[in-house]
Image 1 (tube, rainbow, N blue to C red):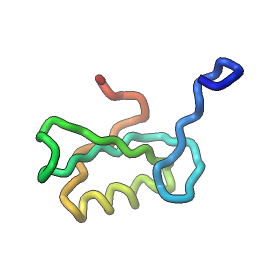
Image 2 (cartoon, one colour):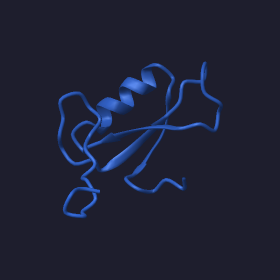
Image 3 (cartoon, rainbow, N blue to C red):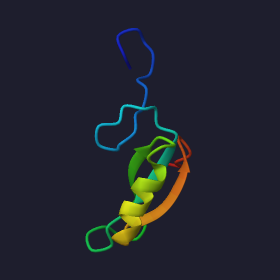
Image 4 (cartoon, rainbow, N blue to C red):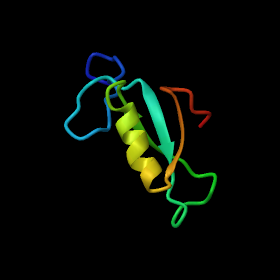
Length: 72
């Protein structure tokens, strides 16, 4: 929470981007994470495809969901 009591705005995980996040790009590295483990990068609409492509090329991307839809 910020000093005024409002929740901080979540921003995109892309390097240098300060845009509000819209989706959770969920991934894991199968060499070091269990199959059910999910790491999360936040993405704005402009960087969603880029982050998914980066992770997919390495075999890490698992799913992309709307921001805040995690069951955790």
